[in-house]
Image (cartoon, rainbow, N blue to C red; front, top):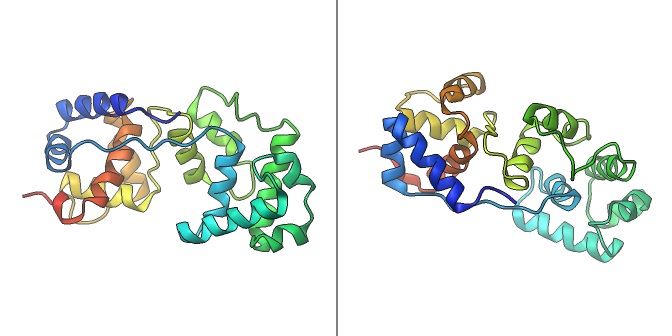
Length: 209
């Protein structure tokens, strides 16, 4: 349920109309592809599993978890699993704790992923109550799984680097400055975040002439 290609295109066109450097970057690398994830517990669990490991390693753990638990996307099954089962699936002690915290928040009803607050900051506040879910993970979930149009993960290194490159800064802007710079780009910051990752992936082709 993330931002559609049409939503991204419309937002980027709106930004290009007000910010010449964004227009130039868009002309260099083109529109980004949508980044869409399913809404719900499974996506957040995958986020926890994927922290600080390669995609291949995260996929391997997910496969083991599926073998051990049967259906890792059922929070009740994971909440009832023993520490030994979670460790056998390849989860570290810390990640097992995080996964159990998420499962318990969902099964208790304290976290209702189908009815998060409409206000982005309130939704982020609910998500970060889960151990192992920081602001960046919450923002990426709201952007990729809920398609919220104005999410701006200013703490993301690639976002900072590419905003600096796009705007012609000599030094990577701090998280605080990255957040401040984007105030004029509301309510299109979600599409711009996706574009910065696309710009980052373009490598030398993204460099201003």
